[in-house]
Length: 264
Ligand SMILES: [Cu+2]
Image: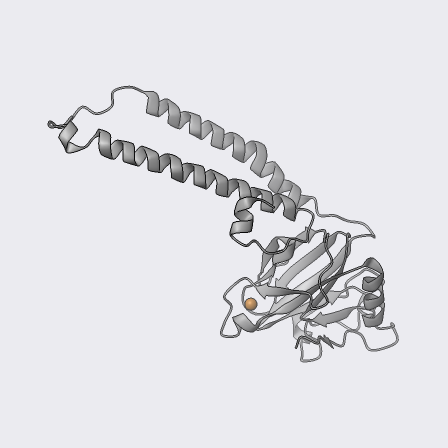
């Protein structure tokens, strides 16, 4: 976990890639500490070395060597290598290689003032069409019930339930203003922007407690922002399958009545 991470009280970790995020936090803090100590030592050295009592006459010539120029070019080269050689490929891995397949859990997260709707595609694994003209009190994401793919879809209000150890892909959008789906234990968050769908993915590696983890809105979105809380539950694959089956309407029944979570 790391000494500094422990010191700053890092929240519980529950995702696969999150270990790397925490490692990066730890390493970056150690670098900051090193820089702070190094520059502080240099600062006091300069204060004493160039104190007025040691230098009665000002030196108007300054530095004549090229060491600092070479040093700066070196810094630029190292930073370019870090950015092009490491940061860009790693970022591309996260944003371009979204997992696909039958084993992947797909959810749509739709933010609104001030709640989250989690749209599950049902047993067919295909999301029904949505249309913002159809949004109503009982149809929070505007699911088109005429679409055959929508028949088994369901919406969990303020409750995101996921299975342990499976890759999860969440498509995020918003109905009104910019929100942010912040899944802190998963070490991932992303803006929910109206008119735009963005995708995040991760793999939960830890079960949640029965109360679940808090999902918070990471963008100041209005007077109810602080109350825009939902719950994240990670359950065993069997318990998840049971919950999923319980909530999936049979195609004959009316689709996608919002299930109200106990948290509300
Ligand atoms: Cu919000």
